[in-house]
Image (cartoon, rainbow, N blue to C red):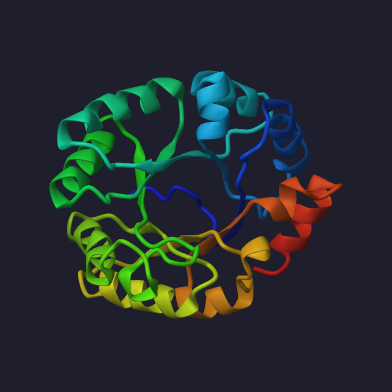
Length: 233
């Protein structure tokens, strides 16, 4: 199975910004060795169209473009094919799924994305307060961990985990390793949400990528900020 990012550790700028800012971020950071990919979401995708967003990035780099629909895989199983076809046509390399609609949707959307050659990253546990039931949220704690478990059972090894919750990362790692998977983790929740890159690294193990949003796109110098965080890996 080909790695989404060849590096064992990297930073991924989360580009929830206007298109001109996205272009500048890519232009100023693509040459930094520690930048492994770029994550784009609905703000760019819905306003400008993903093909244009990908085309903008490709003027500078062939590093992976990861699309985070915030949140994908929350519909019926059959619509996974439609989603996958749109993503493939747009030219993104990988997609993030949060299969909160249940195991049948999870399996169907994973398979649909794989069928068209998209890499799949599965998440389930978010960084903010009151997400799971034990913290006052809507979702049952055990159900959230089952999202990771079921993904691992069908061979997914790339997972989004909350970078500001090292104890949760450790439990997710244990969950997927029981299914024989050696995980690669992608972790948001640093800087503005209080996470420590070094603490997350201890919990995640050898292969992980830090997703950095405001720490880069709110900086006055994108290149300098990206280099600073890459040095902490």
